[in-house]
Image 1 (cartoon, helix red, strand yellow):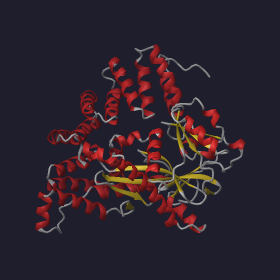
Image 2 (cartoon, helix red, strand yellow):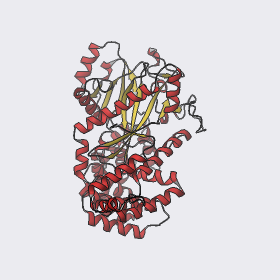
Image 3 (cartoon, rainbow, N blue to C red):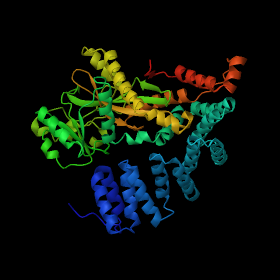
Image 4 (cartoon, helix red, strand yellow):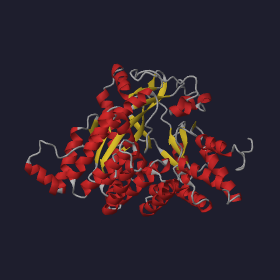
Length: 513
């Protein structure tokens, strides 16, 4: 392995950016060694900051960013990253100050917007109103940034008991939406995904998620299908005991904070895993449902529109991603990730990866629609309603476990529901050969763009979310009595919001039905 370039080498940044994308753990180890040897090297701290961000390690990322800013107090990316990390750690008070500092130097519209959002969450409504007013006055009325501001003001005014004033901003948003539904709705979804309740980001850590799932299975035995999962090194003894009781079992090994299929391998030799750290080991579902002889996984979407009481929906369309090589469990093929790992991004250079460029052809190539898969399963004798019903039950079970653990109560206690946008979650689910779903991973920020079929499915879903979350509540059909209640009664206002959301739910099906 060749020696990586030093921070004074012109190739330093490009080399480590590539390493962070393809071998994050190695990048972190090398960069930590470099900053230990050269603590005054700002470029090394900047790269380490980026590496921790890509690993979603916000605590370590905060420390690296603070070290960078101590060396370079006006580092634009560092200023933005520190504020984001503090938000991701739930330190909203410090995050407000950090975003204000970032905006003072970078003049970033996003920083100004986040100040207003966090003030709203902290219950400092008058300060939030002033912040929104300042950035609204300085914004381009035809620009994209104004969309988040308009929606923020709409929700803030409702929290301030001014629903009719809020409707004026809903009118503005609806006008922009009618001009370009895809652009407007996708922008707002992206804004919401970049600033969720911070505990969602923690669930991306596979070790943290694995612990939640284990508690869920203990609380409701048989209610959820999750492969046995072990976090190393803490649960190494438990893994060895399980392996002794289940001989000839295969295991899939994943970095705890990995993404995009990086660093994953399949093995039948658990003794080779001894000494590993910061990895998750799952029993491998070795009898997957095959699509044209290949393994695939489903991306299923859920939407949270209110934390307490919980309002949650499942989307009735989804995405199926298929491995580029035929499935084969021969011992000499276990190392072949192109057969076992179905993340499309990992196989972009594989000659067997065929992705249709025609969004209307949803049953060919490596990316297909959930509808197409269910049609195939129906043709093969499976009831698609039963299959989707089991998927729905699996998603509902997971959300019930979060509710049992106080997840949604903590969000509700932190700030008004209206200070959080609708939360879209991606569930990675594997069907076994009998058509039963298994929950494999959770995506807190599922990719919004991709192949033409992905773009089509997501565009329709984002538009659906917009129509549910942005609406004029004081409709012309309201009686004088109902209008007066809307203006004076918070319960009537909340009921009107729910009615609007329910009428426009379309492909989003309530998980409480």
